[in-house]
Image (cartoon, rainbow, N blue to C red; front, side, top):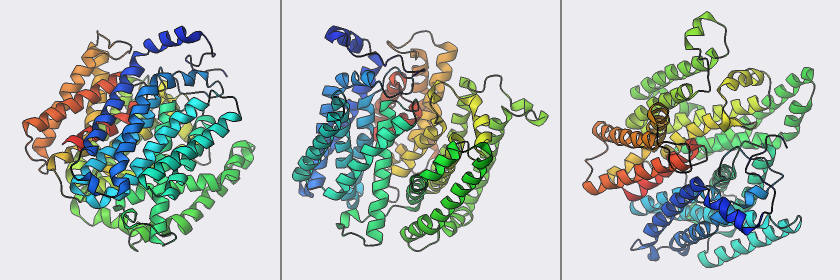
Length: 570
């Protein structure tokens, strides 16, 4: 295909050529070692907890399974990075490294960090988290397996993959006593999702990004199914799995699940939207939208209402906005910033004299893109300091809006699809080389995931609340400052990358200054000890190094990476 990655070379060339190729991949190796090292340290820290052996089998052995996944990823990652160059039937996002190890381990490492914090402060979450830590570790092993067996000719590769997956699941089930049904469902969903993302949206993902997104969606779908099964007593679950999230997480999961359900159930209608003549597109678009509204009203809203304890979702949202004075003020301020961002976007394709002052000659430039980082910084820095749970609720609604708008844009669906496509096209850069435009959604998730993942409402070390600001620190400050400073004053490049040492140093110091200001302003954060400051400094330094060397879209990985380090060690 035209536009195929430069790294997708023809197979062959011998072992010496392969070794030279891998030795030259400095960025991939540094990124891989950072993620594997972080996963190994966090997993070992959890495994060495003094009383973990007194817990149930799955709780005590899930960190051990995770460490095995880390070890295998470390051992095979160099060889695994070679296999994507043989996947001749897939077009990946243009990136110098596909970073399979990063994709495999990052979600499980984040889960392991939350596991450590919950062990100390929220032990009732351990059974729930141990299931997901075990599942993510299995998905890591399955990802390694799928990449290895791809070298086997079809259809033997499919047979080997299915047999290998069943063996992995059976061995893990036998030794950890993890519930078998959720494990099999999770692996089956994941095995469908990742190939679908890579084949249906060519050029939109690297392999690492597809694995991260696939694992995240698998966890979301399984979590929704388990919570609904527990709520409606469809299957008998152990008490530790019968856990209901706080409202902000429920909204995020159910609304995202609803979008996925509509896409799957209405796939024939979507095909008509794509393939029909222009004059029939409106009819099929209206059919899809009305059918989606029906599914949402008859299925998603009742499920969400049941999980919210019988309270109607609309009533919960309205009360959350107007029920307290500070949330109403926050909503008004965020609305002003949202309108400002909308005007900035619309001005790039508008001929209105009122918007000419906001128009840029190069909308996809670094300066224009970093303005959105600044806006997100303002929203999340104030939101976390004032009311993190309300911020999570607002972020869940915005994620739903972004998903719906992107679905309409990519399908050119009436009435907004063509207009959205024209408005966003000037902002596209090399990160959006496929049909999907995901950088803005990744930015939203990078800021929001620390807020959703942190177990709010549980008493614990006050210092660990700094992890709520992980997206603000790493993306709002670190990534933005590194890019701007590197462009203005960068002269010395990191080996094997285009990132500059000056940009990284400036990003590190500005992140530390931001943390100092946050600790001074946020009353929930007590004074830090010298040991805690060392932890913060090392965490920020590692995140800055990852930003310099990662070949993935950093909006997706920097926030969760820093969140893991802070929540596990503070």
